[in-house]
Image 1 (cartoon, rainbow, N blue to C red):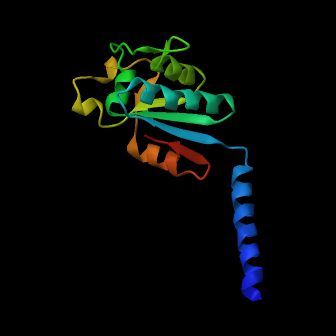
Image 2: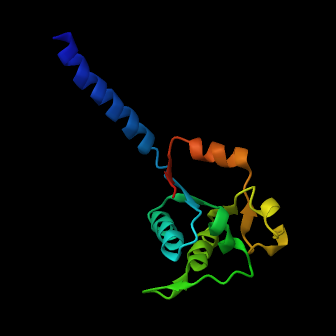
Length: 143
């Protein structure tokens, strides 16, 4: 009998805790872009823009091939049906006050320097990124 009563109470407590966390009005999305493929770069940024349009705070971390989007001299491909690039989607996020950064190991392991990055894209601080990711209201979209 006690076990039967406890199970619904435990479920209710979990629902109450998750509702109170989600109900604080804070919604954050952490997105990583690491792939070289056009669709694998574009789709996370499409979703990040949709999340932004729905009120979420967005932070994008670009690593590996995905970090090439941050390099000024890199010319990303356009995609259908809108004929825009992954960088266009990234710049829309930045233009609306959201954060985009290359991972901390990108520049030291390439021929690029901070001056080679597109304006508005910084270099991530691992401790800061980890703290941001660990916040209770943060959802993570990673490849």
